[in-house]
Image 1 (cartoon, rainbow, N blue to C red):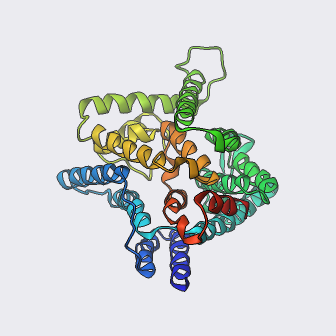
Image 2: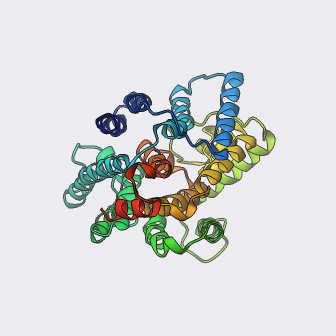
Image 3: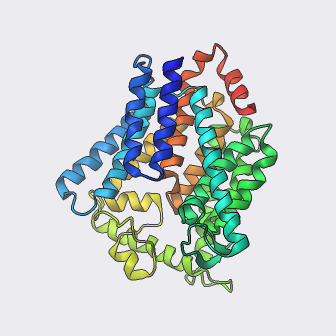
Length: 375
C-alpha cells in the first residue's frame, strides 16, 4: 500500500508541476514503475483503436517531418501515451482522491486570482486582463492568465463538487468562477454539468449518446445563428463569425487532403481574423482539428477508441464523476478540445481507468463508487 501511495503522490505531483513546467509532466511516466503491478491489465478493443490512431499520427509525422512543431507534437505524444500509462497504472480509489485534492487546490488559487482581479481591476501578477466581452464583464484568466485554463480548472472542480454529497453546496464557487472566466463557451458546461449529473444512474448508453448528439447539434446551431452567417435578426457574436469561418475553411482543406491532413496548427496563435485562422490551421473543433492535422482515418480511429472505452462493459457501474465527465467531453469535441489540457486529460483517464481496480477495496464496484462519491 505504501508503494501505491507513493506512486499516486508522484502521479499527482507530476501533473501539478507540469501545469507550470511542461516537461515536468513526463515524470508521470515513471509512476507505474512504483506500483510494479503489470498483471490483470484490462486491454479493451478501444485501446486498439487508440493505438492505431497513434501509429497513424506517428507515420504522418515521420513522413511530413517535425519542422517547428516540436511543442505541438510533444503535446500530441502526451495525448497518445497517457491512456496506456493509466491502463498499466490501474488507478485506485486513492488515486482519484489524490486528483480530487489537486483539483481543489489549483481551483482555490485560481478563484483567488479571479476574485482579486474582479475587485481591483488588475491581475495579481500584473498581466493584461482580456477586455473582450464575456459572460459578466471582462474575461478573467485566473492563475494562468488565460480564461480557457481558468474555465477548464473550474469545470473539473464543478464536476467533483457537484458529485459529492457533502460538497454539493460548494459547487456555486466553480460556477461563479466559470462566469468570471467569461468565455461564452463556458455557459455550456455551466448548464450541462448539473444536467448530466441529474439522474445519471438511470441513463443508458443509447439514451446518453442521443442526448450528446442532440445537445451537440443545438450547440452548433446556436453558434451559426448568432453569427453573421445565420441570417436572423439576432445579435451577432463576432467570435462565432470566426468560428464558423474556421469550420468552413477546415472542411475545405480536409477535402483536398483527407488521408494525411494538411499540416500542424500553430498552437501559440489564437484566432484573431480569417487570415490567421487559414494560415495557422485553426479548426475550432476537435473533429476538424484532428482531421486537418493527421487525416480523417486518424480522427475516426481516435473517436472510435474513445467511444468504445467510454461505453465499454461495466457501464452500469461507472462513477458519478465518469457519468458527467464523459458526455461533457463528447459535447466539447464539436466546438473545441479543452479536455486535452494536462489536468483535465489526466483526470479523465484516472477516473475512466478506476473501473479496473475496484476489487482492491474488497467491495462490489457499486459499493466502491458510492463510497468514493459520497466522501
